[in-house]
Amino acid sequence: MAEFRRGLKAGIIAGLISGLLIGLILTGLNLTVFNDHIKEIIEYSINQEEKRTGQLIPIDTKDTILFIVTYGMIMGSTITGISSGIILGLVLGGLYNIIPGKTPITKGLILSMCWWIIGISLSSIIQSTFSTEEITQNTIYRTVDYTASLIGQILLGYLLGRFWIKFKP
Image (cartoon, rainbow, N blue to C red; front, top):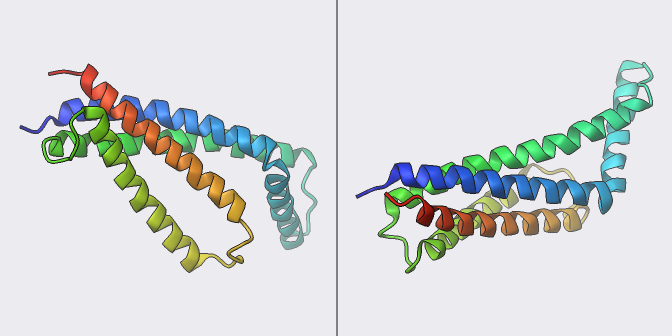
């Protein structure tokens, strides 16, 4: 019998925790390792806007945009984590007996790895189709992003199985 409620509870909590942690990690990386890259993008965008409108944009706007990007990344990762947790929790609840593995943690990890492969495949197709940049230009940034997403999915799968055990019917 499908246990959607149990999967939903486990997925929401697992997604919240993993999304928040990955958001904090990515924000930390963007403010340290990729800080210059982010600032270049912001400055380029501001310069383009100044050229388009003919008006000067105040200097503190760069800091405001960096602040918004930082907290937007945390919020975006958290929302993505929760939505992924909901989807994976419902799938785990519906297909628990079909997914290979002996323990709920193994089943959660298998499910999250499948989700990660689908997500990375779609992301790569979309980026290669619509990107106007050279492929090598953002390779390091994309590699870090994909690695962080892999870590997030492993954490999500582990926590999903852990909370599945905790929310016994």
